[in-house]
Image (cartoon, rainbow, N blue to C red; front, side, top):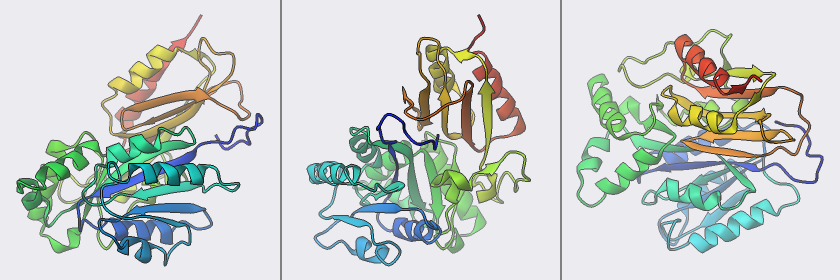
Length: 321
């Protein structure tokens, strides 16, 4: 996946959209990520609600590569400016290794991701939505903003329950129940003081299956510990059927965050690049050097049985003759 492109085609820039309603703690989470980015080149596009982008000023303390978009909903009133900003980022001689878009609290992160993916220079890693454990119940019931928060939760590929240090264990259970009732994903992680599992952002932080993992569930019975995210790989010397492969990822019921790989498909003369995130499946020609086997890395919250199930499903997509 990290091979140098031989055809002059540059690999897409990984894109993360960070959403969540006003005051959910998005900037705190983002600053934690930037503080632990090491030498990675991370660009941040910040959309604040108002004429002055306060979030951008706070984030600039962690990285110099911050692009401002003021005045509210990034997916409507300033959609054109978002596209312009993305074009400029993709045209850079030295592209960032990751772009994070911090959405305004009143915007729909799914629509922002869709705008980003209009340009093939970007590849979606995830839509991460912060949910305030202390206020989510009341916010969902609010007749004016409840629908906004519901859309944010439904569209997430991973959810982070924030400010858990401010609530009791029972309140945490109630909050996680409310979130999971709406969510399209079963990935719900706990955060206190801005701590976020880096494996949601950086693939290098994923814990391989062969390492010892932390407890599967936190005390609430719903919210997962950071150590619970792991990865495993699937390899095959056989070509894979494109349609069957897509069907596998469309019908999987395991808690998958994302999958990526280099695959050889039955009707293609060259290897293909596979990316799966949030129900979206992208297969494009791979521009780098690839070996003769298909390799897929899967990242998520997996039990041993989940891993066996996924591998059986992927084996069913093999073309054996």
